[in-house]
Image 1 (cartoon, helix red, strand yellow):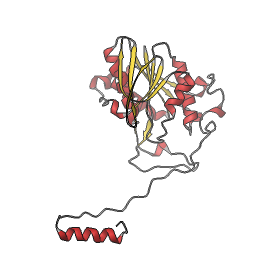
Image 2 (cartoon, one colour; image 1 turned 120 degrees about the vertical axis):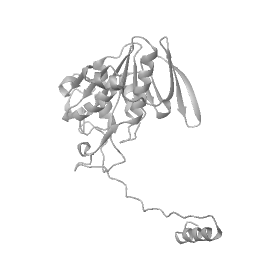
Image 3 (tube, one colour; image 1 turned 180 degrees about the vertical axis):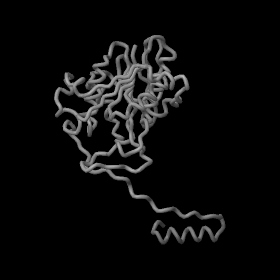
Image 4 (cartoon, helix red, strand yellow; image 1 turned 90 degrees about the vertical axis):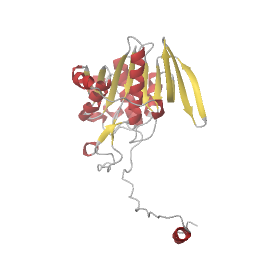
Length: 268
């Protein structure tokens, strides 16, 4: 059984957003981190591996060559194999082009009966939550989004899905696609032994030529910026808000001062 986990290296949104002239983010000029929700998906896969025999965890990502550092981190946490899809042709992709490329990679890895594909709910750079469901549709697999609990035992998979006003428990046939949220678990840290072993585990890089035979790619015009139906008009860092005013005390004078300030700002 394989669990294929889709992971992404994203810009650290606590920093400044660097933007190219074409409106896309200049990722090379920005600090990056592993997408948080994807790490919850990886942790879920590793937990299933720990309690079930013959489970292999495979991580796959699309990005520039430096994405290797994140994939090595995933291997150090316990994943067994890593695949990086990296080529200039894939740059500037929207959710449709990204899901097409990732789907091509997953099909090349192979999805067999009993396998599970896991993704994070969404990436913090785009916040669309579209790539996981699009991958499921293109693979023709059942999907459950917003997964907050997973029970896998004896080949049977049951998940709990978060709703706006409660939860839904669903028995899912495999192969399937699950998108995971942070409430699912707490991702583990890398171990010393894992760090020592991560460079000896299988690591594969696929470029455009390696995936072009897929029906989801087939031509340069179907991937990257050229194959994106939607394009970013503008990216920017929001203006920094003014520094707040701290008030101390709980007496009548402090209350009168607060009321006066709120009145001047036309809040009350």
